[in-house]
Image (cartoon, rainbow, N blue to C red; front, side, top):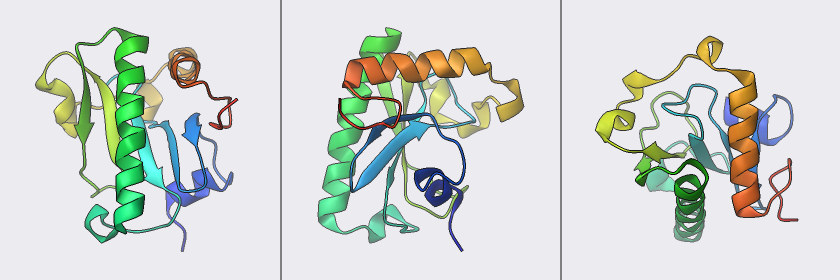
Length: 141
């Protein structure tokens, strides 16, 4: 059975993509610690990041670093947070988010999906796509 992330990547569920290629996809999480909180997810459905092949792992981290710089530029944050947890969805993924302190590193501090503002989520995705040079599908333009 496909994970929720595979369903987003395959277009079965909606997603606010900011980056996409044949190996990884990056989209905003619906439960962010801050607007701009992005998940970098391998297209291949692998449960644990430690089980990813080295090339996919390296590529996912390259994209996470690029998105991290975009997060800093788009939101004026001091840093881009980087976190791997992986308990909530059995599909490897990296969390990247605007960070000015350690509060974002606790996923207990998330906004629930029903608490987020759709306009702010759309604006966050647009800001990141502008920084990354990608379209609404996440592909480079």
